Length: 386
Image (cartoon, rainbow, N blue to C red; front, side, top):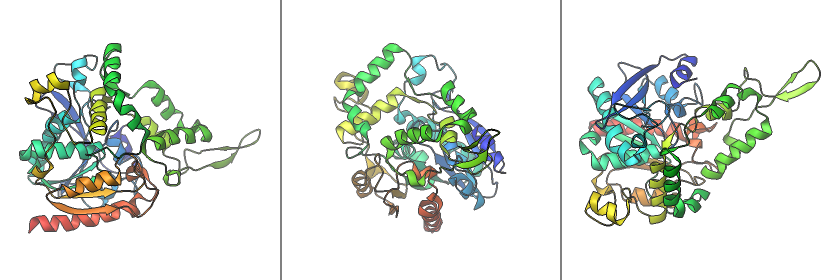
């Protein structure tokens, strides 16, 4: 099911809005409308889409929780993902379509989406980002202050800016990302892990996936993002068969989220986006894309890519982080927090196994994260109106 279909399945209205960026990309935003409610914009992370915020279902997914509290909920989709794969000049088979990283998402996608919502609502909005959705915001707020002025406050789940202390094995690939980029370009498009037929097959027949196979799949995610099997929803239902009693999952019963997650992720990204993160892992800096000495000289008038200057952030920011997050290391999060000019709070999730993906899909995310998030949003809105 698409994001709007997932929303309607839970009994909420859903809308799709298409915006055009100033560099020609057509982006689809999804909305759970509330004409009178304050606008909140949710931005997904790497290889993800708007579905991240609704997959967990009613009462669990953050988009639904916000809608229940009267917010006008907007879900962004970055260029290159399942819902934003159109351009006024380039097709997805053209390498020029994929010539972007999260820097371009920050400087073109977010300003277009934020301006659209602010123009419709005639008011500022609240921004919530997860993972890359936080990286995009920080870069946007630094480079595009006119767009940042339309944001009342920003709430960062698993914030990513500095990355030199991450625990994830992906750090081992960082020294080779330039070679990976060259190989991918040689083989074809600059596209990284798009939605494909295999994942759609798994979605269609998700209820027939063997439980052991599913746990292996889950563990591959945990290897990248941190391990916390207790917060993933595994349910085994015993039901009779004509020949024997078999153990299998029932789609009519509360079910594990893994088949649903696989049907929406990975949602597509550019190789350049992956490489940009690899550069940050290697350099230990929150920096612009490194094109090499000659390319940097042409792009930045310097042989070294400049840092993003966090002192230029004008928006109040709250950080939500966890000890078991292998991608947003507590050390790196503290380094980020120390450099923020306007701080709301730095909130450590009170559960030692909580990981990068748990901010979206953990069974206890509403209690462990969203309750504090809603409280901080209310307090921040009062503070910013004074």
